[in-house]
Length: 367
Ligand code: MG
Image (cartoon, rainbow, N blue to C red; front, side, top):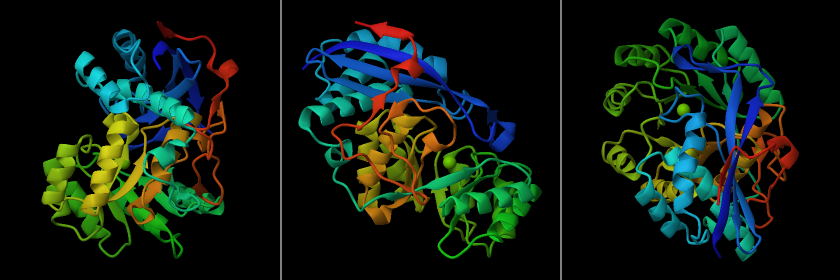
């Protein structure tokens, strides 16, 4: 089987809540997502999706996905999409770095491999664990009272994992954590995700102020060493996210006892092939995980669901249903949230069918 044509489509994903806000005053109102379509000489077609969280979250931006596909695509025409390790080596040889550019291609090739073998991607990624997986809800940065009210509202929708966007003014963040913690019920889990927004002394101060609150602290500071210094001074379970983008840092963080949970995002690693390595390494090292992506619609959510559902249950802290955050659906067959949980499709591949009328005309065509 050979890759015959690579196409990309640009889709806009607005939000039910209008704006998503996190540390440092960063926000997005309409997400710019790229759907990748890979056509083969057998007629099988696979899809992937890449959606950066704006241009200021990770070193990734939406137009960069499309520019990268134009650069990388010609090197992949004629390659066998089922030979994923080999395909990834070809991509890495043709374009250094830029993992988020490669992510959509890799996901689409897993979709093809699944269809070609008659198996859902989650079974190819290791096997399906349980009936479904636990979702978290991100709580956009607002006043303490507004965030507490949103947690109560999302619990009524079935969520029991809440990720507060903090990383703002430390005193306000302390109030945010206390206000939300007062609304928690047995079985709920609370994460305060600073998204690198605190400097070291602020992070230590916030964590010590909420010493007795049952809360995880996620990525308090900009770099790994600052996070490690904070980790060593506070009692809370600790999550690393923005600094974790390849296997070496996971090994270092394990040796330093720098984390209890790693937040692994598909496009941050460059696709399902590479995040599977990281996921399996975390399982071997006894590290829990939030498995997700930066953002996305139905196709990204389907890929996330297959990755999460193929992860041993006790290691999966939470995952995300980004396709429930906005009104635009770009594919049929994507996972739908039920009681705060979702399940990967049982159909071959990702189990999705893109809505071509929503995707519109291709903005990248490589053949
Ligand atoms: Mg995070």
